[in-house]
Length: 140
Image (cartoon, rainbow, N blue to C red; front, side, top):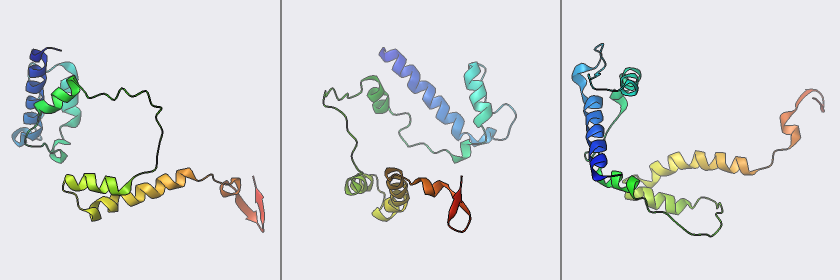
């Protein structure tokens, strides 16, 4: 895409942020709909008008750097076969520490997810799906 299209997207995202943060028209019938909004935008604004209070935007939104990353992504062109590995907890914690999240907060969220992940790795026995009717005999 041309630089003009990037500028247009940045302008639209800026307008979106303004709409989302404009508390003056919250609760009013038009839901912040503008005359030049397309049908999809009108529908979006009407459906999401009450959710705006829960949204937050970084100070640099919309970010030209983010738009640039979408336009020219860094692509791994490796032909090496992809393979899954277990979660490197220390690396996750370190990365999120860079985003100012404490290890305690990270682990508070990560531990339940890791437990659920570990549960999916275990092969369940068929008897786990059966409920005994009486005694030691399971009824299918």
